[in-house]
Every structure is written in C-alpha cells, then in structure tokens.
Image (cartoon, rainbow, N blue to C red; front, side, top):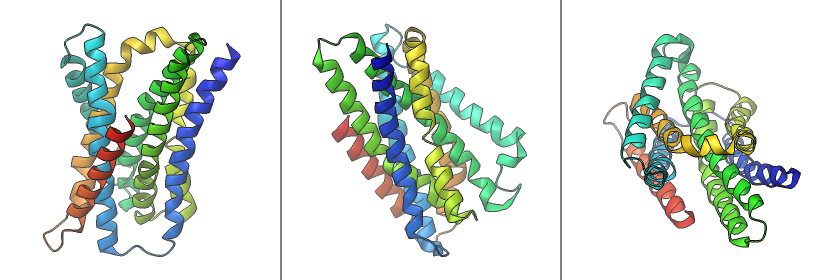
Length: 258
C-alpha cells in the first residue's frame, strides 16, 4: 500500500508544483501593474476559469454520471447549481469575502476560494487514477493513463496559478504574499489525493457531483467578480481580449492533453 500512496503523492505533488510555478509569474511584475494590463490579466483569469469549468469539470462530470448509470445531466446540473449557491452564500454572509469590505484585496478572496475548490476534484481525479494503477500493477496502461492525467492537469495548473497571484498582487498584496496565495491554492491537490487513497470507493460515487460543484463555484466568481472588474466600462477591450485569450489557451490545453 505504501507504494500506491507514494505514486499518489508523486502525481498530485507534480500538479501542485505546476501551480506554484504559475504563481511565480508574479515576480516578473514587481511594480504597479498598468490598469490596461490588469484588465487583461483579470480577463485572462476569467477565460481560464470558464474553459476549465467546461472541459476539466462539467464534461468529465457528464461522462462519469453516464458511466455510473445516472441521468447524465442531473449530477452536473445539481452540482453546478449548488456550487453557485455556495459561493453566493459565502459572498453575502461572510463580509470579509466581499470586495467592499476591505478594498480590492478582499475582493480577490472569492477568486482564491473558487480556484481552491476547483483544485479539490482535480486532485481527487489524479489520486484515483494512481490508486487504480497501483491496484493493477501488471497492467501498465493504468499507470500510463494516470501519468498522462497528472501531466495534463499539471500543465493546465500553470496558467491557473498565475490567474490567482496576479489579481491578488493587483489587489494590494505584496509580491511574496501574492505568490504564496497562488501557490497554496494548489496544496489541496495532494491532500485530496491522500483522501482518495483512504476512501477510494466513496469518492468514485461522489466525483460527478464534486466536479460540477467546483464548476458552479468558478463560474459564479467569473460572473460576479472578475468580468465586471476586467471590463468596468467601454473605454477599452483589454478585458475582453484577455477573456478570449485565457479561454482559448485552456481549451487547447484541456483538449490536447485530455
């Protein structure tokens, strides 16, 4: 069993490392970020999160629902709705998560929470893949599939790390604080992988719901926080261009590495 746990930690540790490398992009922007660049980055974060919600979360939720013999639309729809309601309640009942409570920095807390929630089912998916590989040591296809999944999610995590650290930095946090917040949003992936190792049979049943829940949480933040900040008026299209670029990048990564 120890070798299976080590494989799980290796796979999810790699995805966490890629989030950390993405968060390190903030070190290239030590000074104040130009408003137009900031709008582009916020738009980029929006596009990344929207594409990840579709290809990394909702489509796998639909596929796994069908595999479990469930109505293929029910867990995705219900989980998505619950994710949005969860973030709405957090936004309205916990004032320190709201942008008006303590300036721009507080407004990024929902973003950090949503991406962290999104990383949990990703970590579970990688962990489960390596658990299955460990349970079938004589079938190398399982290990190859697990390694491919970890590689794909890891590469996708790079722009997600940047999509957290840069808005946090623009919100008023220091460079190092922005980096650590972006990096630590990915620490839940190894933790989720360990959870799967301990409770694999239960997690398999819940995965369609968890994936969709994370998607709903992310889309809520995109619609409520990021896009309004990225495009507050009609003076420029930098936010819109950022959304398109972020969505395109994540779509290509998800499809090419999926």
